Image (cartoon, rainbow, N blue to C red; front, side):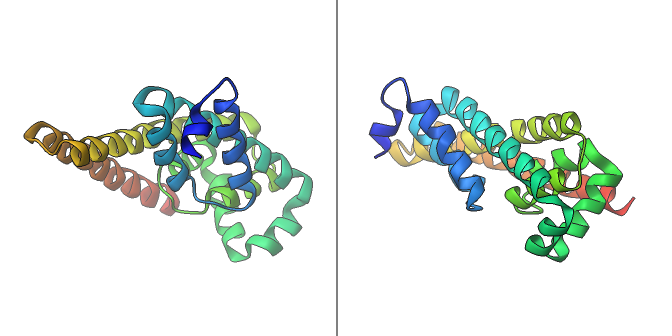
Length: 184
């Protein structure tokens, strides 16, 4: 399956379709991103993952907008109100943080942002800014794990340790920023 997905002109479009379908069924992007990196490598993988994430985010935003705040609140429950409050108060920054940290389910954030009519430009810009480092870190982590498993020499282990340290540091920083922004 993976070989067929990456082959041909339509491979990238198929990947984007998988992300869109995954968004509709609330499949976690943190699983899709490293798989995309595994299939397409460390250069095309992040580009296709980013396009897929963005396509899914935009479609779910539009669906949320069409569903309205009452329907989305019924579906998402109390999470919808907490997410909406943070998005309303902090807009772009909170979307970027939600994208980098899986503090709330990806699809739920998309639906809530649309349903509560967050500005589309703030939403898409925050989505891109938040996803870009996360997608690249997950891709680098996947690549370094793959290299270490294939050839566990000192350099590949060092690459893995360095990538893991960057991922951990970025996550700690983003978590602190999220907590500070959500509290203030």
